Amino acid sequence: MFLLIAQYVRFERSYENFIPNRENIYRVGLSSFRSNQLISPSAEHYPGVAHAMKTQIPGVISYARLYNMGYKNNVIITNENAKLEPIAFKVRRFLYADSAFLPMMGYQMVKGYARTALADPLTAVISEKYAHMYFENEDPIGKTLHLHDDDSNDELARVTGVFKDLPPNTHLKFDILFSYKTLFGRGDWAPKRYDQSWTRADMYTFVQLAPGVDPKIIETRLPSIISQYKPQLKESHERETLSLQPLKDIHLYSDLAEEPETNGNANIVFFINLIGISVLIIAWINYVNLSTARALTRAKEVGVRKVIGAFRRQLIAQFLVEAALVNLFSLVMAFGW
Image (tube, rainbow, N blue to C red; front, side, top):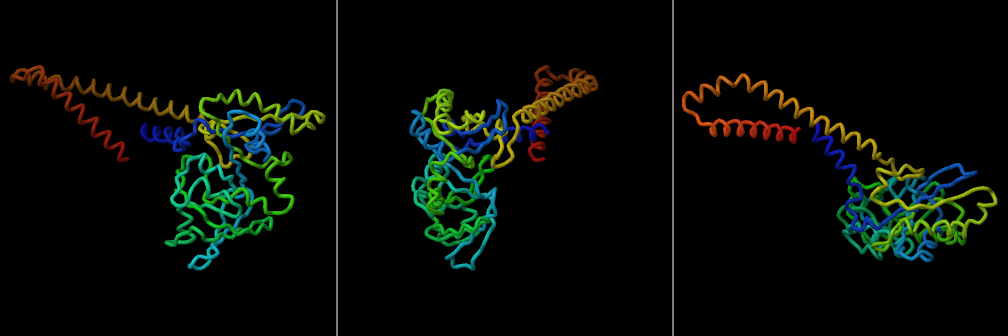
């Protein structure tokens, strides 16, 4: 039982550990207030936040925006020019992503280059799993994926990369990424809407800070950005604040609206860990009690061995070996279970 609990706790605390620069990556959160009352703390915010932070705040070296359409819309993606019969899947784990997203997170690429894979409009990267589902043993690079969704969007994207399937210990799970610039082709209004808009709060933004930069100092600059781009809030007695969430803390310490998935809870993990330690202590106490009780029954055996010539060190060695074998056997059984 203790080993099962320890394995669970270790997994919950391992989220994002596979990302190389996780210590310097933060997600931007948005909290809205009306009459000083919190209305909605959200993981999503305005598309223009990222560019404003990058250009106005020293220490922000990179940003990546994500448009989470797979969780909000029915997205059907079909392989267009595979040698196989056309295959269509409803893809829930689907995002539009800035070109900086892959290199920022350090995801392993099986084919293609992280820095350039999403640089152009109408390009896509897919996971190993979906590469096999769509194209089996064919090389997916250069093949076309056709997207349809509930909003009548119709987009053809060229596959430019394949990334290694993501491990389960990440809060941001996806199978297909389309380039963020693909959104700009939806109409003359689209570049402003998806690049510089401060009207609709529906984007995730991750920022990478330079090594050694204090995120608290960065946060002190965020109110001035809100005041610059949302001056109307003061007149309507509203207030909005931006904050930085460490990437490695999102799974256990974030409880915002519009999370990409249900997060864990640090308090629950802590108490489960206490339960595991309690189980271990109780098992240890029981073992000591049983060993003590058994020792009384073996007193006669010790006496007989001494009478027939056993030395003290031989008796000590015997009991140590017995205890070691019992514990080793128990450990093997526990792992096997």
